[in-house]
Length: 445
Image 1 (cartoon, one colour):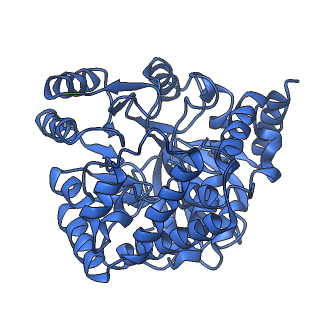
Image 2 (cartoon, helix red, strand yellow):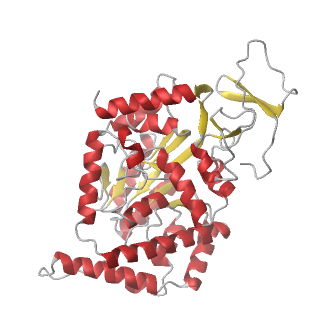
């Protein structure tokens, strides 16, 4: 992930949590008693990073402890960015992992969302004015969060007040572009990453101002559910029909100039676009606890209630346009991060990151570019390039050993022979045992 060609015939020496040497086999001195792992014919990559998860959203605030973490480790994920969750669970969980009391990925987190009223999700701080914005940001910084997460329902005043407070506290803010704010305004305000392309496609319209006004149209009370849905579909058609290359070029230039990164979560967008498909869920269903499965089924049933074939076709068009926009951004210098939003309905923790990488490549990324989005780019975004993101001396030993070359076929990231987490080796036997324990837990046995 350094941009140079893969190096063959290498020996990587790990002592404790760190890589201490990388060099041609035979040139690296191995201390007496060193454990040898034969990687002949295999491929070593940095540990993977899922840059959009919700560890405490798996049915209950403490769902992370027996659900997501084992699946992440088994899939080579050694670092995660939690994009909204309960600090009551996240703080002790991160400490346990840091102190070696629990094996798990390195965690960066935002804590509660900052949102308008009513908030879209919990836990949330409802921000209605500048005073609340300033106090909530200050309080979250004191509680040790790594960044501030903004949501869609924020008013303009509240959003820009949060941006000002984040600058004052010298902490990044990330998340959705609120419905009342344009993506260009978010870039100018200093938002460091945009998730799910929220309102980015709208910003590529030749008629963005009108589309924004229509988003906030207050329908008469006599409007039926079917009429409301028809109005939304009409708006989406107008969004597609008014796409402007000039507007998208200007927005991309803005993102590059303001260093606004994108976490498109294509796997989430695909599940939303095709709600009748379970995609990768069925294969891994045995790892999903029944409480989480019930949440997924309920959400999917609501989503499918009124979907017509015409609407499905429109969603497919919007997904295709979003994918092409991500490629256009990446080719023109906008940084892209790999994230999944797991455990959103049918987005299976761990496995969905491999699906995200495959979707990036299907959209037009080179395999190395997709891999970078889940390794060195994530380290760069989080300001941790000195510690991880590549295989190099002095960095943490977060590594994945693969049976096949992911640069030839991105699906080879699934062919995991071993995972190293801060120097601790999990071979295939240990990984299979981890998965078996998770399947047993999920089934209630």
